[in-house]
Every structure is written in C-alpha cells, then in structure tokens.
Length: 58
Image (cartoon, rainbow, N blue to C red):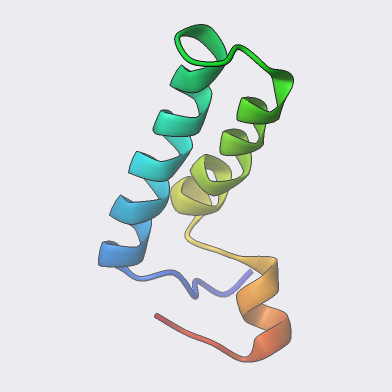
C-alpha cells in the first residue's frame, strides 16, 4: 500500500475519529459513532482506499 494521507490530513482524521467514538459513550449513544473507527484506521496506516480510487494524495 502506497501512503496517500498527509500529516495534516492524519491529524484531522484522528480528531474526527475520536470525536465520533466519544459520542457513542457521551452523546446520543447510538452505534453510528463507531464509524469513527474508519478515519482512525486510515490515519494510522496513512492509506485511504477512497483517495486511491479518486487519485488524491494529501
């Protein structure tokens, strides 16, 4: 896998992912917050499959 997620993009993804997961426990407590795992995973591996499809590198 070629890295296609830059450092600023990684920080944004980590913050967004954590906020979504925290909402599972603190906010409306719906399972939809677990979707925050996706931005966290893509931030930690520095690869986004959607970016690959669209030809984007940040």
